Each structure stands twice: as structure tokens, then as C-alpha cells.
Image 1 (tube, rainbow, N blue to C red):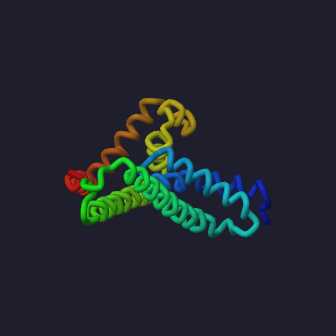
Image 2 (cartoon, one colour):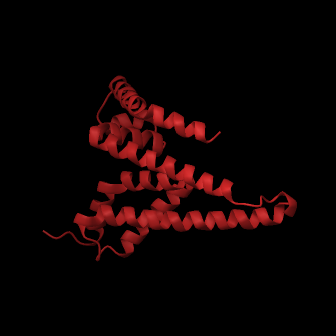
Image 3 (cartoon, rainbow, N blue to C red):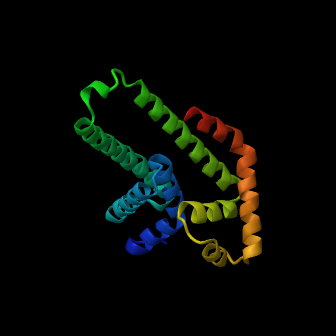
Length: 183
């Protein structure tokens, strides 16, 4: 049975909205910019719904997120340079751009670790993944998410505790090393 139009969009959205937001957040590292990328991505899907196949929708969406994020990062960097140009004394501008390159590389490493954590968390336990994303990425209340997932608060807190523990055991060292690089 072929799903058309709005039903197809709704189906794709429901299946992939969390991964799309996590990907946008991983690239942007800013909740508001990630929300903008998220909205633009699903607007693009809505406009092209007849050309996107349900089977390949996840790859299509993540590719769109990547390209929109890259464009947004370029735009933000350009705007910051323009603003900085007018606010900075020319004698204070560094002679090389090593610092910028280093920050970009550190940001890339952090984004890669975030994606790796979320991908492996999803593989480890989809329920943990959904709870972590909804509470810590989307900023929804634990009570609301627990209700959606059909859990009482004690069980939900226990599950979050186990999920965070799994993440810390598995990635705590890498995360700490990345933080040390930022100093």
C-alpha cells in the first residue's frame, strides 16, 4: 500500500524526528540553531514529499541536516567575522588562524563523539535513547516523558540513571579528554 502526501510526511516525521534533532544538535551545538535546522529539514521534506521514498527517508533527512548545518555554520562564522572586524582593533587580530582551525577541529571531535554516543545508545537500548533525547535534547519534563512511555516516575528515574551510567562508563574518559583539550 502506497502512503501519499500528509500521511507519508507524518509517518516519516514520527519515525525520524528524534534522530534528526540529535543530528542537528550535534552539528550546531546550540539548541536554538538546531531547532531552526530541524524545522528547515522537515519543511524541505514537506515540499519534496513526492520525491522522497519512505525506505530511504532517514538517509535523506540526515543528509539535508548535514548540508543545512554546514551552510548555517558558514553563515554564522561569516557574521561573527564581520562583526568582529568592526569591533576589533587591527593590532589585536592574530597573524595566523591556527586558533580558529584548532577550535574547528575540537568542535568536529566533539560532534563526532556526540553522534557516536547517540548511535550506540540507540543500538544498546532504544527506550534509553528515546528517554535521553526527549528529556535532555528536547528539554521536556521527566514527568511528561515518563507518562508518554507508560512508566511511573520511580521506574523512569531508574531507567535514566542506568542510561547515564552506561554513557559515563563507555564514554566518560573520551569526554573528559575532550574537555581537557578545550582548556
